[in-house]
Length: 378
Image (tube, rainbow, N blue to C red; front, top):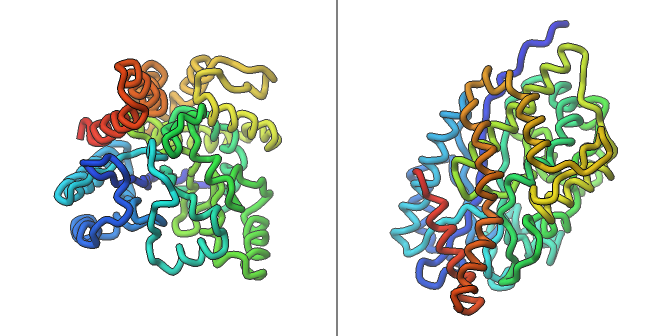
């Protein structure tokens, strides 16, 4: 039976941290009125997160990258405007440069309370934020098939999104420290490989029937079939501070998905590699971002990231044309030229230290940069 082309609609979720404009530390207990006002203005597109210092937004279903741009401008801008009324500001980043998880307060929501009861310190340490990109794939079997193949590219997406070099006041030496925290939970990391959607469902059902999870939404892989929408949900990326860079990575995600679909209808597919090899690239992306290259698994050697990106952009040229996101795809080169948020945070930190300020003040300067960049170009 002929398979009709998926919609390739888009939905983007971003999680922000709320910082106090005086101390630059997290607002561990923001006033309830702040969230009420955000909810009044944004309706279902905003929600609280595990920590009270976090706030999550989600775009409507978007049909173009232009739709995503306008939605994220609206969401970031509204959160910033409301937060400023209460003496705070959102930062689009995956870890705060110096806040301490022990000082945070959790949202009193049943799901979060159960999570913390089950996971204990592994959940209490989740002072991290991520970006999730949903791509509309209506056919369940296709969703699983594309998930199996798309796993190869997850480290590439992480490398270009890194925004979590600091943890509790320390330069960790990693560009994405976030995943070292998140990976302490079960059901995280790379997705499993499945021969069919029915096989996937059978495995989920084992966990549900055993009383370990309520449903598939408690499987937190880097890439998963969404439990709520007919989408393939990419979850590996850090929150990207620069909005234009965010859009470029959303464009890359949907173009890669469509490229794999095009190959499938020609009876071709991307080779599925062992998880141990993809995990090696995942670790390299966490440690170095794109600075030290990734393994080209077909060649079996580490290749400089600019070469890998050139190859990817050639693969998806037809898809960028079809989806009308050529400009956003070209913006990927700007990420390599000007650095990820993690690169820029470290630069701001080092510049401040070189001027002779204290470590604490240098970290505050990083927060200043994050506040400014989160709402830049809105």
